[in-house]
Length: 527
Image 1 (cartoon, one colour):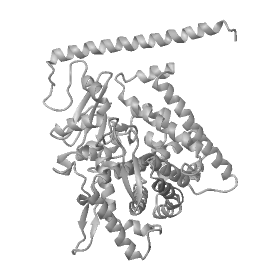
Image 2: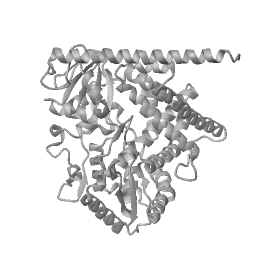
Image 3: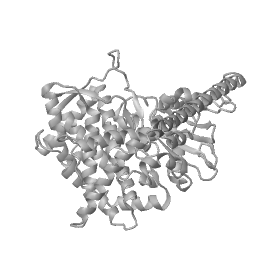
């Protein structure tokens, strides 16, 4: 290349960057002007008595702009004031929809009128760069085929094998020794990061017959993947929060800002998934596997790129959800020592009954006897669901059970985080951490047992035809980790803010799952 051409190329890039900045500045001035105008026209009052403020021309945009950094708490407050915990949301750019925390509405969209509420083209398009057309980002036959294939892995035998051959071994040989070392040295560790590494190793082993070793040795490739996977998930979900809905397309076209970081992260994620697939293809030439990925590889029409989408989707499901749930559980448990004592008493009772000691691994059947622990984990999920909001699209005009009108092309979001905080759903103590709400006495005055809730009142695992296939697997893994850690260690949370005070609750990052912003810093002490 002629060196004389380099300044010209650099100048062109500089001009493009300046033009983009100028466009952003003009857009900002335009929206500030409209913002002022709308407030003057509406005299700073909402056009309705409740719900999201709807300004002339701008709709909900001004409040969304001011509150998107605290979207969950802001929208929860709005929904709590609405008669049916449901509100209509309008933004420029034809972004119209309904946000609901009403169980009847949730059941209507997830089950009763399921076919009218698919993922939709907007949702799929925003996440397609990252998730492709995997099971969590697809509709119709593409989704049905993947779900049917995956369902074979989630039976009782597979669940038992997962617990005893994968999760328990990973816990005993890698996870617990790290905690023992931290206790001996009295060092602070990031429990959220440790849980993510543990869950990542597990899902890779059970679903792809591949061990990334993130909890053992340097785990270099797995650690790099996890970092970029988290960034890709956060930046992809951030597209939903753009003031201008199509701005990400411009940023992607010119490859700058968050879109530059996103595409770079996706390259690492795709390479990691592609390497797993190539390795499994070579192994399949020698012997057939029984893992989840092998089942999909046996379907001839699935291309390597589509297999990659499947791998990424199941990593998202198996790693991010359980690790998020456990991190929030251990944090909220630190505020309720009385709950921790009840869990310890339950574990002691199970140990006495089995005749085993603390060094023995819990069996699958023993985990199923942990009713109080199951209730405590469910209560943590109610208040801090891993997937805080989920969105569908409306295909045809519809009316929700509470009378809310939904137009064709609108989005409909059910707000799981808000539902856990609705007095109309959970009673006056909805903001309290109280595992007892999940327990009841067996008929005849027997022992206290866990009582499942209506899935549309507690849609943490979705509901209807798309209900989470791995629900029981997730609960079993969470109980195994929680029971083993609580029995052996006292977990002391040390997370503080810059001024040295603990922030309650910790700040969260609203990605595809709800993570703690700065991790969960703890010290562990052996009991």
